[in-house]
Length: 113
Image (cartoon, rainbow, N blue to C red; front, side, top):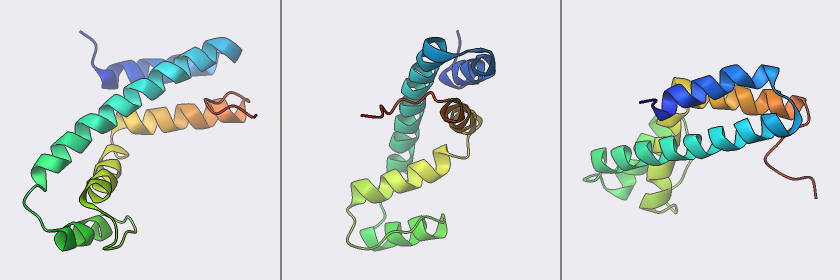
């Protein structure tokens, strides 16, 4: 069974040889897996920081290097912590590089309308 991480790495490895619609399909699948991975980390982070006050969460987010303030709610703060953690994973880094390379070649998930 292939994990989401392994599949993202496989997609990222295949991306340089892909073009146009084929690259867009790889990017879409990788994006979906990226979102699933972030959601998994978000659940883990929410459980780990469940007992912290909002004030302590703000301090944790700031310590993680993400700007935030006390006006943000717990959901936002936990998402910032999760994003900080997720972006350091091999899967997230591979996806980011893949998306940047695709964008340089004119392929993006965001339409130019």
